[in-house]
Length: 77
Image (cartoon, rainbow, N blue to C red; front, side, top):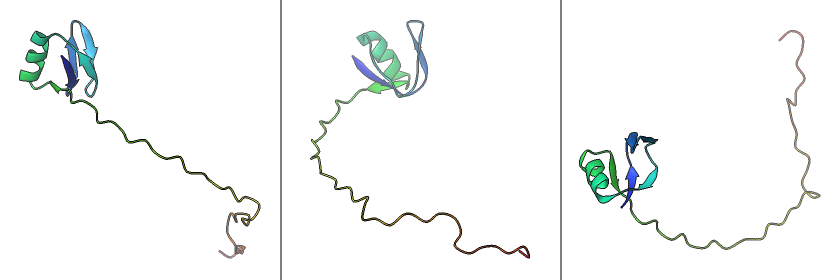
């Protein structure tokens, strides 16, 4: 059975961190679920395919970025 671990646990002597997904036997799955350390993993929803948009780079027409202060500081500051 596929589980999502909600708390850090040891399964068959191996540490398993919270948030990970594991495949275990039904007996171990029932023990972890009833103790509140895991829940049944839901099937991931299929992600919709994203359309690739074309980017137009206009580096020659953009003005150069200004950095720093535009006003010079005087020694009195």
